[in-house]
Image (cartoon, rainbow, N blue to C red; front, top):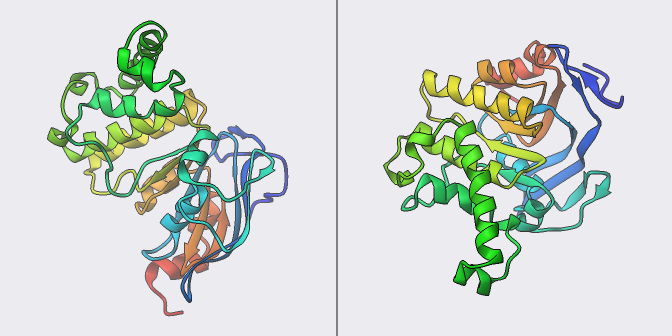
Length: 272
């Protein structure tokens, strides 16, 4: 496995990745007497696409929920941008620059694409409720600026043709793209994607893969994603951490992880 103690590293395609953005140290999460995550440590570095993979029930989504503050581990530390993070709620993590999508699409189905993505700008709005109700003066100026940002995201994701369409009328693949747009509207430094291609056909997966790469490359956003399609993971990820039954069994470059016997056994269902 690669030496992960150094400050940054070079990816398999020659890109230079920066220092540690988030470090998770000895994370243990219990529900009653059951350990969903057991003493797991890994880091996420500036500018990389970090994949978290493993069989069903491995603890992947639980780990994302820990990162964005939805779950609070009983043991371990989370260090973000060099500071040890205290117990916090998801909206506080969002204020720090952590945004996410969900395994099951979580959109306002009666609202348009534009309005759903505008909802992602909420934490960026600073005028008080009184000014927002009036939609006049400073509040109107602020709304115009936020709409400009949202239109840039709509153009970036190539969904101009559905900007006024209620998302409940959209096919699943486009709903996933709108959800990505809403997450991007918060201008995150760390974007968490929970199975962004689940339920998609081959063409939709190719489109989503392209947009994820563009978000990372053109917007400079660090990404941590969960994905079951190993072909997609090997194409997208700079580094891969593998979980199985709540434990970390491998961590390294895609080529290293792909040939790790413990990973092969986990995906083939070898008895533990």
